[in-house]
Amino acid sequence: MTDTKGKVVAVNGNMVSVEFDGKVSLNEVGYVKVGGKSLKGEVIRIRGNTAQMQIYEMTNGISTDCSVEFTGDLLSVEVGPGLLGQVYDGLQNPLPLLAEKSGYFLERGVYLPALDENKKWEFTPTAKEGDKVFAGDNIGTVPEGPFTHKILVPFGFLGTYTIKKIAKAGEYKIHDTIATLADEKGKSVNISMSFKWPVKRAVNCYAERLSPDEPMVTKVRLIDTFFPVAKGGTYCIPGPFGAGKTVLQHTTSRNADVDIVIIAACGERAGEVVETLTEFPELKDPRTGRSLMERTIIICNTSSMPVASREASCYTGVTLAEYYRQMGLNVLLLADSTSRWAQAMREMSGRLEEIPGEEAFPAYLESTIASFYERAGIVKLRDGNVGSVTIGGTVSPAGGNFEEPVTQATLKVVGAFHGLSRERSDARRYPSIDPLDSWSKYKSTIGHNLVEFARNVYKRGAEVNQMMKVIGEEGTSLSDFVIYLKSEFLDAVYMQQDSFDEIEGASSVERQKYVFNKIVEILGSDFDFEEKDDARNFFNTLRQNFIDMNYKEFKSSDFTKAEKVIESTLSSKNAQVSNEAKKLLKDGE
Ligand code: ADP
Ligand code: MG
Image (cartoon, rainbow, N blue to C red; front, side, top):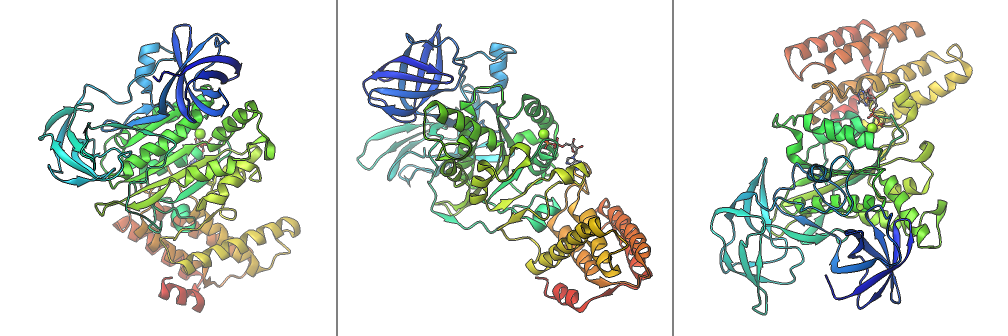
């Protein structure tokens, strides 16, 4: 605590005004003393000798005679071994321990150490005395679950340090000194396996930022082929209730080609969060067969918890992601939902009586959202390793209206947009990502021209479908009708995917490429159809043939059998691949 003395002069919801005597800085953490408890808050505005603080707890009971203490520290998280598998609240309190301590209703003002201070870790030094090191450099390792956790020089260290002493291999606790470093002036400082880092400050101890052009494969065909995400990229998923957001998040967490997944559940209904909490430990990591939790961190903040900690949840999540990126790992951060965070911002802005922007959101909504997503990125570290943070944020626009400010602000900064459609989820076409509205700026794992060819058939088919709603099937030409059937076929056998089947739910890149080529062949083929019913029956059969194949292990004998069935269905209508499609397939682009 600093010497600064503070006293509450006004309370407005979870914002309190504090008159202070001494020095206070923006984003400094302070504690309001009430009824023997200390409630954590953060300074968000300073006017003269009055500081406005947002309080991360319920503020009932706070009155104008409460005193306030200031810490001189920014809102920070503790990083070090032991983060994986944890379930935290927005302030990095381990929730299971908190619940143990305070019972069913979480008590205010109870803050617990984020990492187990007594657990011993098997440390192996990788640097030696005399080595010159910089912030973020690796000086030793400990095994953590399936990973080699790298012990890093704290990110706040400025300039060159020389290692004076480093611990021998052996068991240490996170706060034991493991090395003594000397700065450029020869001043010594002890470091341990953990340190603190302010959540609102992006970690930038890398050599260079790379451009995100390596795909982050999700094994969801519609995403990887049509709306890909890159490692170190950003994407957003607006998802109305029941549209399949949770299922999509779970499949992504399980199958995405990343090392670590961090879920920041901010402000969603308690029921949904409980769903995540109960389901996650049950999920198996397909790579290791062990619990997915071993490489997951959940940060959890329900709609019934104080709104200010929603913001903290998002920042805590991204900071932990940056920490693991610094070890050369690929991390995926799923923030659910950023709309709830924006609502918290709106509430606080109102209390501060700031000039409101659109729909009463603060004028800085866009820049805040932008600077959050900017913390994603793929970077080259000083040791040559590459690590990435990919951010996927859900948005829950009221009434599914994508024109509202939060969706719009997000769309400006993300690299891919997976808009979930109510219409598709009602039709049980999962994943319900809208094939017409969604987009991505990243490179697909499949050749651009092939994807565009299929997308074009899909679009034209959708147009025919619209037209048919007006003029009916009778007024539609056979050739238009076939385009419609082709687009429906593409949708049914490729865009839609059953997440609950082990094989069908996770399609490798190799498999996607293989199957997509077949589909392009079909979309680009002419058939001998006499009439519409003829065409309809044919595509119904073909669809079922393909779906059968989708459930067979890739290139197994059953898969080959299913392929043979498809071939015979195709030849029954004398399928002739057009020259255009032949050329596309030959180029493979
Ligand atoms: P949300 O989180 O958007 O409210 P959910 O993810 O809970 O929606 O999805 C609602 C229901 O839709 C699920 O319980 C499931 O039955 C179905 N569903 C969603 N996605 C899929 C999918 N990819 N495959 C099969 N069924 C799905
Ligand atoms: Mg859900």
